[in-house]
Image 1 (cartoon, helix red, strand yellow):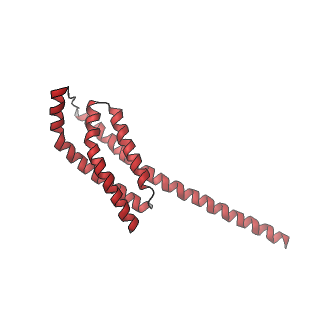
Image 2 (tube, helix red, strand yellow):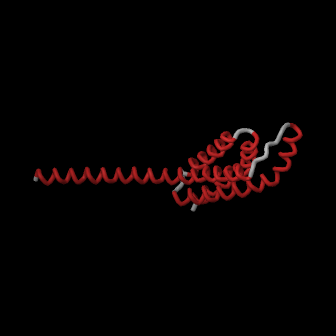
Image 3 (tube, one colour):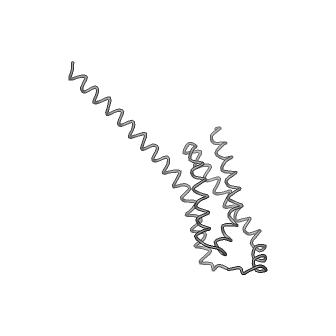
Length: 155
């Protein structure tokens, strides 16, 4: 229970940071450089996946889901609230580039793929750990079988 509470606390903290970063990533995607923005989003998701994968699988997946909901939910809310101010500021000081609906759909797909990597990293980590443990256990069993086989031949 303590691990679950700690993982949810961490996910809440990372979710709030992700929520603040989401409008920055979107505006960077629109006006600065698309791959830079997706790189930031992917780097954030990989960082959170590495930090949350230290917990048990159930706790890590629960915290990842909580992080996703908090960061995307609050992030979209913040983007809706701040978008008009950002557009007004950029139009006064430079030029604001608008995206077509198709480009917005590509952005949403790319962000969801970044969040999918979060789950993929956690699942791969636990899959590799369980495979390594299985290989170690099989090696130990093989060693004991071989030792018993040679012990029976000596007697």
